[in-house]
Length: 93
Image (tube, rainbow, N blue to C red; front, side, top):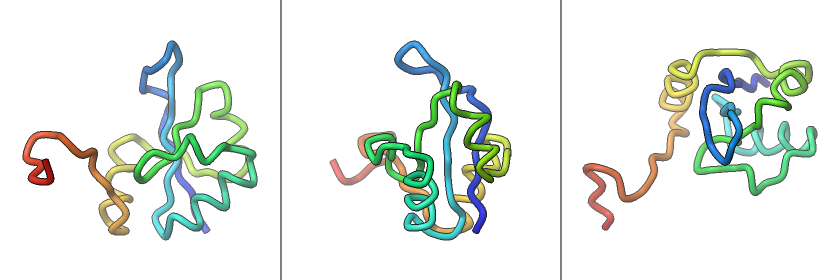
C-alpha cells in the first residue's frame, strides 16, 4: 500500500492544503485517512484535502511525499482522476 501527499501549496479558507491520494484504489485511500481520523468530508472527487498543520503527521504515518504534478500523474495512471464538473469542455452541463 502506498499513499501519496503533495506539499501544502494550495490556499483555501485561510489555510494551506495538501492533497492525499492513492494510486491503487479509493478504498485504500479511505482506509488510510480513516486510520488518521480524517473526516470523509475532507474527500473531494479523488483526493483528501489535508491542512498544512497535519502534513508532518500524515507523512509520519507513511504517506510518500511527491510533487503536485506527480499526484496528478499518479491519479491518471491509476485511472482514478475525477475532474470537476462545469469546467471548460465539460459536456455534462
